[in-house]
Every structure is written in C-alpha cells, then in structure tokens.
Image (tube, rainbow, N blue to C red):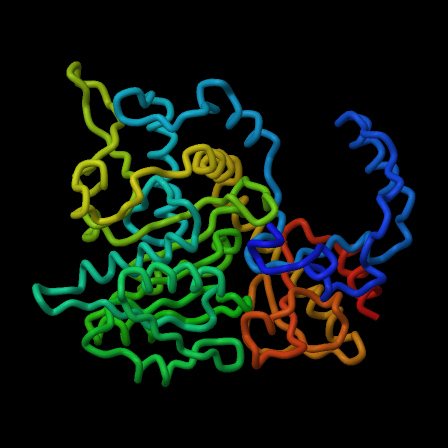
Length: 424
C-alpha cells in the first residue's frame, strides 16, 4: 500500500503528525472485557470524573445530528419480529401491517410538513433535497424548453448542498449558490438569480444557522419565475413554528433523525419528502395507498409504481425505488406517542433551552451572538474558545471564529452551566 501511494515508509506517511502524538510503542491496554463489564466500567469512569465541566457538558454540536428524546415504546414496538426483518418487503410479500404503518407515516409527515401528500420516506434529507430539485425540473420543463438549473441559498445545510451538487454534476445540471447575509438568505440576490432556466429555488426554514426565514416572499419570487420552491426543515421544532408547506413551499424535505431515532454517529437516518398532490406521479420513492380487496374490505397497497425504476427503467422519475422502512416505522410510532401536544411541548422545551444557552453566551467574555435573527433551536456565536460549538469556517470560509450552538429538548440547565464553565 505504501508503494501504491508513493511513500517509502510508515514514518513518511505520518510525517505531518506531531512527534508527541505518535505512539512508538504499543500502549499497555488491559485485557478485553465482555460487553456487560465494559458498560459497567464506562459508567464507573463517568461517575468518577464529574468535576470536569467538559465531560459533564455533553452539549450537542448540532448541525442536524443532535440527540433527541424517544419513548422506550418506539424501540420496543419497532423491534417486534413482524417488523424487524433482514429484508425489505416488496409488494408480493408485504404484510398489511407494514403497509398500514407506512400509510400512517405518510399521513403524519404530510401534516407535519404542511403538504398534501408524502412518500414512504427516502434515504436521508440530503438525497431528498436533490430528488426534489430533479422533480422540480421534470415538472417545470416544457418540451424542448428544459429547466435544469437550481438556485440554492447558502443557509441550506452544507452537507445537503454537497449531495445535491454531486447529483447535478453527474446530470450536467447547473446549481447556483446565493451567499448568506447576516445568517439569512439574501433576497435581492435570490431575485436576480432566478431566470427562465430555473426549475427550483431551494431554501431552509429553520436554516442551518437556526434562523427562521419567511418563505412567503421567496415563494412568490419562485412562482413568478415559473420555478418551484423547495424547502428543507427541522421536524423537531414544527410544533411551534409554521411549516414550510403552509408558507407556500411546493416541496418540503427533512432529515427525520429527530423523530424517534438516535444520532448513529452521523447516519444512517431517514429522509422525509412531502409535496403538493399535483406532483404525485413525479414523486420519487414509494407511495402506499388504500383500496378495497376482493371482499370489499379496506386494504393497503404500494401504488403508482409505474413511476419507479424497476418498471420504467431509464424513464423512471427517480432511481430510488425503496424506503427507510424500519426508520419510517420508528418515526411513525414516535409521532403517535407524541401527538400534536407532545410535539408542541418538545418545541417549547427546545426553544427554552436555546434561549438559556443564548443568555449564557451573552455573559461569556469575548463571546458575541453573531446574527440577530429569530431562531428556534440553534444560533451562531463568535469567539476564540474551541468549546463554543460547531466551527463554521470549514463550510463558510468568511465565518472565521464562528460557531454553531444547538440545543434540544434534552438540553438541561446543568449542561448549559457546564458549557459556560468549559468555555470560560
């Protein structure tokens, strides 16, 4: 392998690593433990070092993968043998129970995102965003007048924009990114960027910085230019803010990792996809509908499969012909457990935790709130401490010393206090 990459030795491979970080001898590790003994030992170490504020803080970095509350019922029910299988059930062997769960999921996601219909899920929010833009191109193009250009706000999550760019590069489509201004979208530049080739205007509410953006004026801009408004959102706060669909978005996508899932070290997750019912024959992924069987009883079935790759081949609306079945089931159980009031309570708890964190940041010397915009769960601060939050310079070179701070309904007053002490 060294020869293949052009290195003469291991030392040359690691020459950029500081000497004091290199292990020249094998560490003296204790013997391996069983899983039970390992969990016990980790708990002992956690209890033994409660005075370290950085160890106690456990403050989520955010960016879309912060931990959220989930009822024990979610895991208990989702792992029942009829649901937990090693194989995704297709039409011929799909049970009515699984199809009904997907149908319930679709119904709740459509209501949550403020749209008329939803599919049975996609891989994640990022692929959902790219699929939404491609769908917008199919819907807005007329004959030889192809619309294969999307205008995307820089306030949309960077990882989602990167996936979308990969899709567009492969298809030869154009993606135009509009720089953020003060943590929100620059409406004037958005207006100037939309032209007769634009199929989609892509926004976020809340955006990656946590800012709440009014989508109504940009919906008018998109529709006035013959394009669709595609919006990305965060479902955990939709119990207290207006949904993108209610504000005029034609397609709404999201990561569903806050709905009964765990961060999973960054993935895998669950893609939520909802839109207007006019687009139902262009929607990617699976759709579960209701019908009647030969005896007149209500039945569930996968429907409109002529859109999909296994039937249409290269003429399919998308190459996705599956869904995140187990994760969608978990999300459905989670939403049923919460109900509308539970969603609102989670949103209010998240907002209160974020406000507490913002108040703590205002008391930290050398730390300032970067953007004066309304927000729900996240906000941006400037400062020099590496413990402030998620560094933004990686994706936004002009935002040096800017950090994203994110709270959730699990964030406690003790964690906020410990975070403040760690920074100071």
